[in-house]
Amino acid sequence: MRGHQSISDHVLSAGWAKAGRGGREAEFQSPVGSAIHFASRQAALIRARFAALTALLLLVAVAGCTIQLSPAFDADLYKTVTELNVKAETLFAKVSGGGTAANFKTSSATYDALIGGFSAARLAADARGAPPMGVRLAAQGSLKKICGDDPTACVNPTPSRLDDVISVITEMRDRHQAGRLPAYRVAYLKSVYEVYMHDVLVFEANLDR
Amino acid sequence: MKIDFDVKATANAVVRAVKTQAKDDWAVIESYVRTQADLMAKQAAAIANGVAHGALKDDPDFLKTSSEDLAKETKAFAQEIVALAILAFEKVWNATVKVLWGAINKVLASAGLGALALPVA
Image (tube, rainbow over all chains, first blue to last red; front, side, top):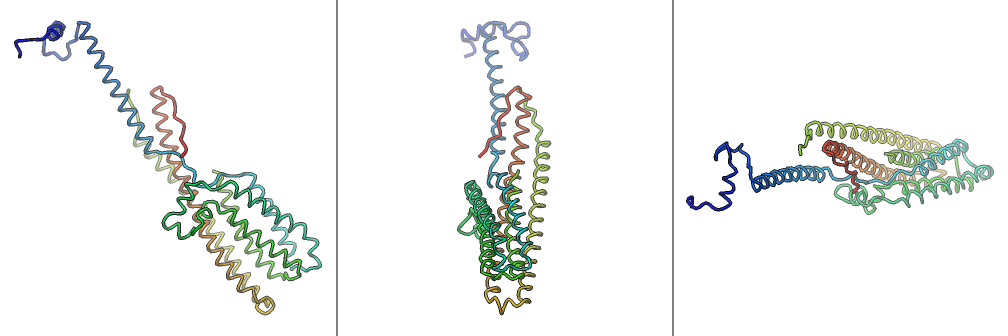
């Protein structure tokens, strides 16, 4: 249909001025031509922006989000357990030679303060909870074998360890009160206490990220 | 709009961030394991000391309860390592995300666009 040019072809051909029909560098002179040229440039710009934004969004999707798998750091809790630890170690030193029913009274208030203090700290550590994503992770695959039916213990272990600490100090108090606390028992209970307390102090300190 | 995103520099920054964070976290776990092993060894010495001081005769439950304690502590030891490893994984992940978001925001800023807040899952 080369012999029958449309009206728009005529309008467009009129726009090709000096450069001739084949020159791609030629510019449209007519208003319609300019509008088409402008629109195509805008479309190219929008396409470029769209491609750039898509690339950025892909990067965002790959980068993902920051995550929280472990509990938040509790500065008050850390300070409390650190201070209670000093008090407990002082008690172990005081009764290192063994405790008798007769000298129990001199340490009775310290036992109460330690058991009460660690119980309050345990409640605070438990109340802050464990991030659900961390708990789900601890319940997976080989971690499940270690964490068992309580994956929370692998995400927020402090409450369980403080339970153990309270048991040790309660046993020591009861033995002391009953006059059944020889020196070797004190040394043994101190060693058990330090194993659990070390867990608490290391984990809590590392939560400060 | 020209996007000037240096992929190689960003990848290198991610590798550096992961290496530094992982190295720090491994140092924490290694130190924990060493100290805890030391404390458990001291406990074994305390058990031996108890037996040497007549615990078997005067305190028949001593050996039984101490072996139960060691079993419980061993389980707690493994759980603590998992807890520290989960915390380490979180730190490494977040270090990576921060580097990538920093690079994205740098490009957005150079294009005259506002920075995006770091999202939290």
